[in-house]
Every structure is written in structure tokens, then in C-alpha cells.
Picture 1 (cartoon, rainbow, N blue to C red):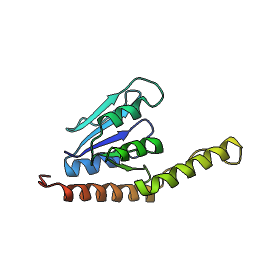
Picture 2: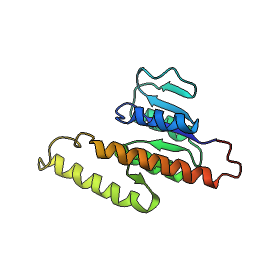
Picture 3: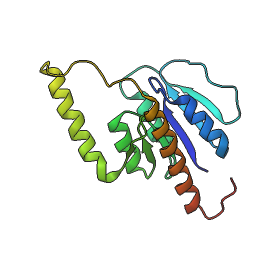
Length: 155
């Protein structure tokens, strides 16, 4: 059964995921390095992992199955999940695909070098309303495409 995993520590679209997952009756697991408040609803769980570099990412990759969905802004995590046959969606609604991940990694590396040189300062811009809308639309489209592929669509 399709499952949604959220790389939750800095995810700005948790509420949107809860809303869409509830509509399709899908389970959601948030993976984080510390406890956080989550809705007390059926199918929503929090997995708190120990602190450490990539511990949450490793947990997600270990548990994700083909056609599950991973919500993350972490490009290496998205790449690892794609290799396992899962779908990965960025928090602004841009899907990570095998075809696009190389360019996304190259862009990330370039921006990292520019930050180190002092040419670029600060992080990504705040999430805009249109980003949330694009995220909701993309998540809905990915879920529908996965459900269409499944032989018995019970949801």
C-alpha cells in the first residue's frame, strides 16, 4: 500500500500532506531527529531517530518501498529514494525524477560553491502561496498516477 514519508525536521508542507493523505486514506510517517507535535489521526506516525548526519535519511531509505512517496528538500535523499523506485517531491512541489536529478545536484553544488565564495548569502526564499499550491497539485497527481497503476484500486 502506498505510503508517504516526510523528511520532517524542516518541512514546511506537513499540513498539506496531512490533508491530501487524509483524502486518499494513506499512511504518513514523519521522520525527525526530535519529537514534534503531529495530529492524533489514524495513519499519521512520527519516527524519532537519533541525532547524527543522515540518520533520518538512512531510516527513510531503509523503509521506503517502490511507489511510496518521499517529501524532502534534500537532493541526495531524493536521489537515493528514486533508486529504490519511490517518488520524491520537493517541498515547493517540484518533482525529483531520474531525468532531472543530475541537473538538480549540479545546481545545488554550484550554489554551494557560490555561498562558500561569499557570492550568495542566505538560504532559499520563504515558501510562497503558489509553491504550496504547486506542491498540493503535484502530490495529488503523483498519488493518482500510482493508484492508476495498481491492479486493485481499493482507495
